[in-house]
Length: 177
Image (cartoon, rainbow, N blue to C red; front, side, top):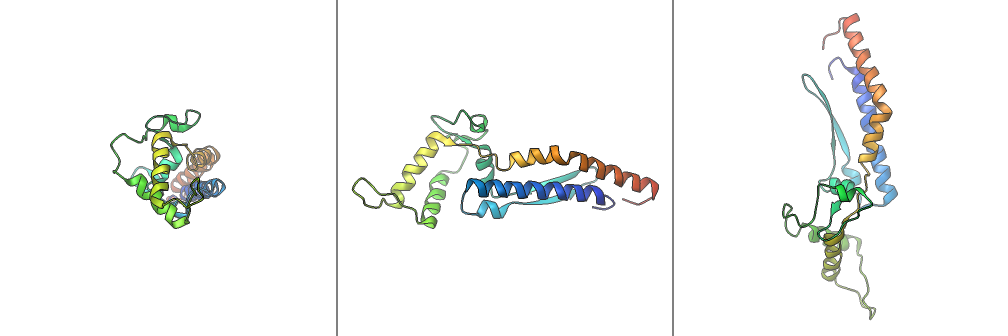
């Protein structure tokens, strides 16, 4: 950022805090296979009259964070009930849920046993799990939302102070932007 070093430092501090806390939340909750954890990053963008912190993650990260309403029920005690996402809405790709679950099961080499003690096929397990998720939905995890909001509370003074210092420096020292 040209001429806004203090503001840039404060934005960097904020973004690093959010990413670090979001990763901690994912680790604590043992969510997924590490792809979401590894995909978390940020970019700081400067336009002519605004500064943006662009947080990046795998596409499914927003579903993990905000939850997804089920077709027939949901988790009313969580944010999933308020989520803008819902299974059965017809807006998502067909078969995407099953494909993801099948891939996860095969990668983890995870299999249940039936009543007779035989291993269930991946196809059967994929069907059972995806049907349950489709009907019940996904609980909101808020792994990203919580640190995002807490970071704003925690670092708002640093952001303000950084901006004020940069403006003061440009007026007093005549620095160009």
